[in-house]
Image (spheres, rainbow, N blue to C red):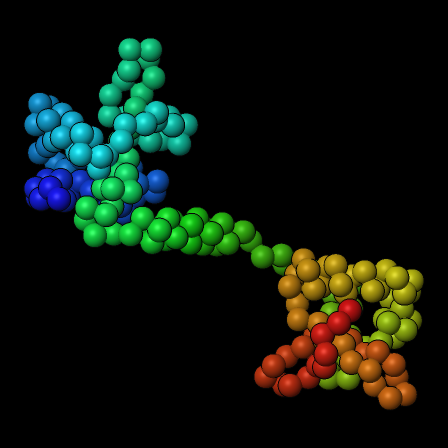
Length: 189
């Protein structure tokens, strides 16, 4: 196995930490013929690969090809292994970062007060919960609409933990499940 130079180690480590393993920009002070020689050696060893740059995503350019397209440098799986990093680990970390960026970017839905949906939530938050008949009476909806809001909007869209249980004398009671209070029964809507 080829021993890495300090420059090669710096380039590979930096690239492993960037999105899509982009190896650019190169370390400060590495430019011109020295940069070209270092990169060519790393490409020959299979540690770097020259790929088409995505200008729209702002990927840095290594060089411009004869047909006017730009290329960039990426660290290959062999390059990651050369610095002791498992490629699967890097891909997992990238996937986690992308997922985290999406989830933090998504604004959770806000609940407006005074709406029928808010009234249903208030009924379900009570310690005794609410039956479909009680919801229908309180907000003047049809039973199928109330069931649809509970299962579609409250459970799926808003992610509220709705629990249901059969209560003697009342029938099926729905409530917003709270582990702290221990309210709620078998979860089925």
